[in-house]
Length: 412
Image (cartoon, rainbow, N blue to C red; front, side):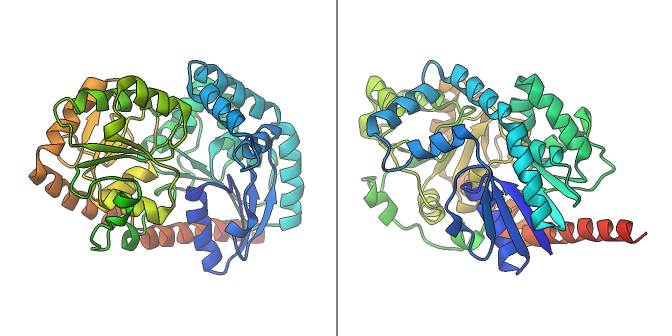
């Protein structure tokens, strides 16, 4: 089958999904909406249709970008003006939609796909719908597409509605988003599927009966015997990391032995400032971005995984933590409640309440039996609902169903 993915090509979640279809010898084309390394997708054709803003952002992350400039940009995105910067960035991307849509339309006419999968609603799904493709259009909704972007920006809501009306099928990573899509205009009689956004979890990597590799601890100066809490989310507009850091200051007053690992925060000026001002240097490790294998090693050796998020679907990091046996303490969000029953296999908390998060951390860290029982439940849930090969088989069957339905209509 000739499949065209319109996606952020640098995204590990998109890569995990797309590589399956390449491995199954489908003819795969990737239209990346962000500058990406083309060799991430061997045996696939890759085109870039990027915005000027994304080009500049990519340049700021290269080794050639001045360190001072990178730190300044990080402070703008995550400091006191973060909300304004987020709004400005979204509106600048919005203004480039017509130009990029025209390019995507021309590329689709060259590729002639039998199926198009736009792997996010804003802006990939919006541009794919506006391009008026001939092939069936499958649109993915990720965690904050409707609850954050569509809810906050009227233009995005309007264009998301049009995209959902044009879409031939819908993929969501949680049932909540399928319900929301129906409420704003998606015809629920059309085909839909609920699967993890990244295609599922490779359980042989994240659990697989392996003993934790303590090498990851030694690499980051984490004592072998120290209780470890991992925050794998990095900096995102909808993750309340200030809550995370304030909870650490409260927690270590009673449990000074706990170490907290914050992934993708090494060298980040805002994280450094919180650590310094709260005087929690001894208990915090600001880590660089990690590969999937490194993340698996870290989660397997962590007692707890935290995610103080206020907008999410089904976070890939939540599923990874569950597979690895790390106890999830996560923001109380409707979509997350599809996986976590508070007090049974995880804890839910207000993402703005540092004291509540600290209480949860202390309760869970002091109850090894609870952690072990939750780990068994969570590994069972992953095996039943989020195992990679099983999920991707369902996705491939869904693709074939869409393509065959289209072929029957054309033949009629």
